[in-house]
Image 1 (cartoon, rainbow, N blue to C red):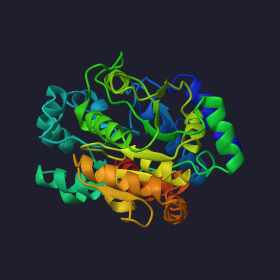
Image 2: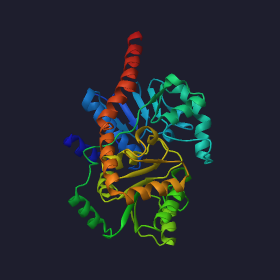
Image 3: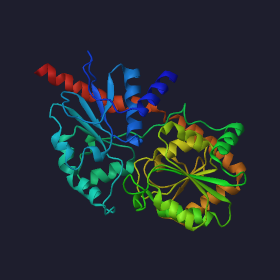
Image 4: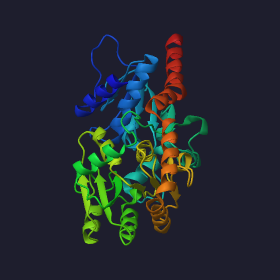
Length: 374
């Protein structure tokens, strides 16, 4: 596992791989974005584990041009929709992942993808989702139930681990967190585009996050860790409220583990999500969690047992649950212990096994059967 972790770290620092001229070409290609962000991380964990566990050569790529007779998994809907699906060679077996997207989101790009979904789904062999809510939504939009496969995201348990008192103190000192502060984390991209992010991406709930933090600051000495690009909207609101914060964009996502270990609380305030992975990362790190009822949260978080679930856009509930965590250290320790146990079931190794057994092995068999008939 240590060797695989080093390999993933090395790949993340470079560019995604494209098909080469090796003697044995990959059977599975996972399409990722050029940017070193979430989808690329997922693809590396999935392909490395599938190859290691099942001896099926797998790679991440950023372009499907020239690929024939392979399994081609598009790591997010934006890589496949609204029109790119038309350009994929018909000899490939196709999977695409739909994390989130609803008719309530007025963004033109989102609506264009939803409009293209029925036609694009016909060309795909399988559609991957990460949670029951997204599955239900796609079925309502006409995607055949038997074409949809639900597999949650995973977490690197070697990277995200509970902090000891010494590692926690070291992390807070290195980051520069004042000793008397309550440190709250938000590690995501919640601005539109890849620039400053002054226009909020409302689906991620940056307005709700700011409302909750400002309210908490009235009774607690709040300090905020902001990890991720395009956080301009949140920064502006925190500055206006005179709440101290530490902004950081990490070139290597593995560095984020240290920041979880420095936290007293992690907040997910999104209106819609496929994951987010932060739920599992916080749990595995032993960081108390309050999240809205989005994505994987409703499946993984047991109310008051391993975290807290708040209603979407319900700032009052978020503040209430967050205050309970901060003001009840004994009860919080029990919650954290349960959360760590929950995260163990969602290792990337277990997730990759599910990907292979529920999707890839099935498509490989179909592909081989087709060649046999030919």
